[in-house]
Image (tube, rainbow, N blue to C red; front, top):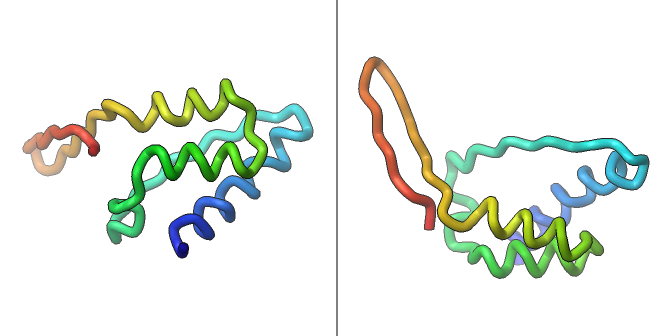
Length: 83
């Protein structure tokens, strides 16, 4: 339940600018692994429950599925896909 509460909190901060015709951009780093057991379907369901439109929910889902992560540090590169 804590993951859904956190998602609701984030979506609440996105809704206000959206309702005012503004654009919100977010970048998130999950350094503690808090969301790593949350399925993409749960994230999409929470967005729908919070009232985001179907197109926005589809966009969120497509941004999650097939993501490639690239980390670079001191000349070394590590690549992987997010599941």
